[in-house]
Every structure is written in C-alpha cells, then in structure tokens.
Amino acid sequence: MRDKLVFAGATALLMAAPALAQAAPAAAGPSLITQLLFFLPLILIFYFLLIRPQQQRAKKHTEMISAIKRGDTVVTSGGLIGKVNKVNDGEISLDLAENVRVRVIKAMVVEVRNKAEPVPAND
Image (cartoon, rainbow, N blue to C red; front, side):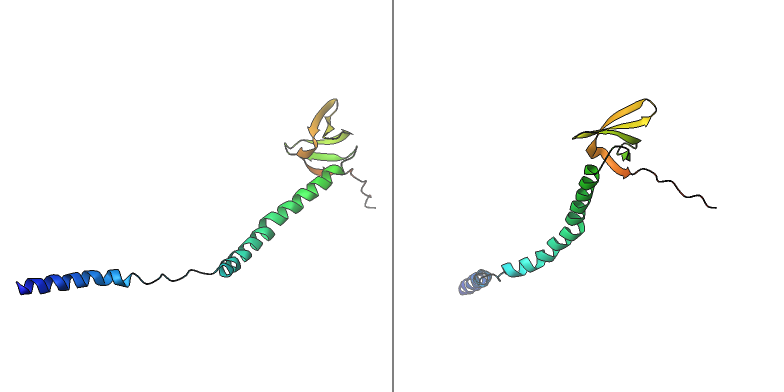
C-alpha cells in the first residue's frame, strides 16, 4: 500500500511541475517605437510610388482641361477626335465631321492636340 501512495504522490508532483513553470510572465513584444520604425518606410513607399504620381496626373489633367479653347483638336475617352467649336463651364462642343456636332463633358477629354502648324517645304 505504501508503494501505491508513493507512486500517487510522485505522479501528482510531476503533474504540478508544468503548472508551476507556466506562472512566469510572458516575454514582452516589440515596443511602439520599433513598430513605427517598421511601418514608416512602408507608408513612405506607398506615398511616393502610388499616391503622389496619381495626384500629379490629376493636377496635369485639370490644367489641360482648363486650357481648352476654341479651335483645339481633342481626343475623348471614347476615342472620338474632333475640333472644339464652343467651350462652356462643364462641357465642350466638338465638330467631328461636316455638319456633325457633339457635346462632350470636359472631364472626358484625354488629350489636347493644338492646331497643326504648317510644315516648311523641303527645297
């Protein structure tokens, strides 16, 4: 009987050992400054590769649209090429062919091709 008690006591002691070992505090994670130092370059890369070029393209497009004047040749996002007949606040009137006039929203203009200048003859 004594052997059974010793075996039961030893078993209880072995079972309790892992529970006592878990009482130690866990290791602390990285500090806030370390996390910021990791994400700051990532944010800068996104800004310089994605956000800033898109803002510059939008600014250029706005300047191009505001500079449209009568007589300019423009290309629309639908692929129409025409000569500007009239410019209003939000739209322009294009002459596509003889007696064919179309109204187009200014924001749909992709490219402005100014009047072609005469090319000198090669003499």
